[in-house]
Amino acid sequence: MNNPSKIRVLIVDDSTVIRRLLTQTLSEDPSVEVVGTAPNGKIALAKIPTLKPDVVTLDIEMPEMDGLQTLTELRKVDKKLPVIMFSTLTQRGAEGTLDALERGANDYVGKPANVGSVTEAMARVRGEMVPKLKSLCPRFAPARTANACNAFSNEGPNESVAVPEFTLRPRGKVSRIDILAIGVSTGGPNALSSLLPQLPGDFPIPIVVVQHMPPIFTKHLADRLNSKCELHVAEAEAGDPLLPGHVWIAPGDFHMTTEVNGASAKIGINQGEQENSCRPAVDVLFRSVAGSYGRHSLACVLTGMGSDGLIGCQAIAEAGGQIVTQDRETSVVWGMPAAVANAGLANQILPLGEIGGELTRLAMNGRHRRSLVTEGAI
Image 1 (cartoon, rainbow, N blue to C red):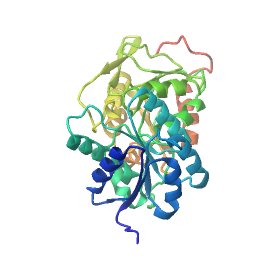
Image 2 (cartoon, helix red, strand yellow):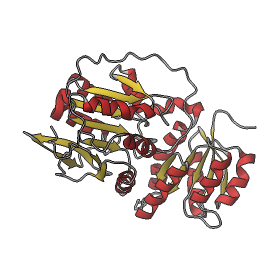
Image 3 (tube, one colour):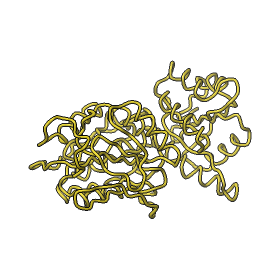
Image 4 (cartoon, rainbow, N blue to C red):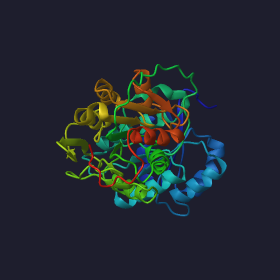
């Protein structure tokens, strides 16, 4: 009989050592039960109907049927079963993982490398994997408030809880907007793939984005987004000028800030202390934007675990800027936007499909619709 108090996990990996390590690591948590393992996707697909797991962990490179093929076949018969990729943090792993997310994977945890001991490796995996398992399992919805970094996904279950009414922050008179700052985590790659193509090529202000991701991944994400929209998208580098119609993604393991001096504005990059267990952190970027642009700031908080961005939104609100958040129904994990909404900081709470139009309307306020590539950032 299934134990409703535990998350049932199926581990799929061709390495016997990894299967054993992950089984032992996850089984130490009282809320998790490993109900089975499989050395490849073909065997995993055959086991799923019998084992009825709540979540599947899936390697990418496996014999007979690899992780990408497995996802493709699984999503033909089950659109909802959460899948967490468990693979290496390499360039090849980054491309494979982003492919997996596009095919329907929900999240990702990197296999530990360059660690001092098996105990340390297990602790690292447990610290990343267990919160993500809980965030994707409706029965453990409260765990979605935990902080989590480097989390990203495609689609998955939301909490089956009543949606409270929120008090929106009065908009007041909207000042001319000079920058758009976006914070996103779990579900981010696909949310950005939906949002950024909604924005026109003559979008009149610069866009800065913090997506919780490890190094290597952010460059690949930026390249993919650049191929999908009219805007120019790139991984940020220190000193990049903040230009209209351009999008900068914070590089993995680096905080991103905005630096304004007179009529010029540029990107700042640093490796300061983590905030909310994250680097890059949304709070760091948002506070910087509030300090640089004040009431001319526009913040957008999209799907994600935890509450990163809440403190930054408080700074933007105090400066008189505008804040838009994604709604619960279209969020993969309604943690970050919920934290802002619960605090009464959001001016608007919108479905993902409507956010692009509203951001464009706010950015165009007080401007003529024309090509503004050469216009100054502020």
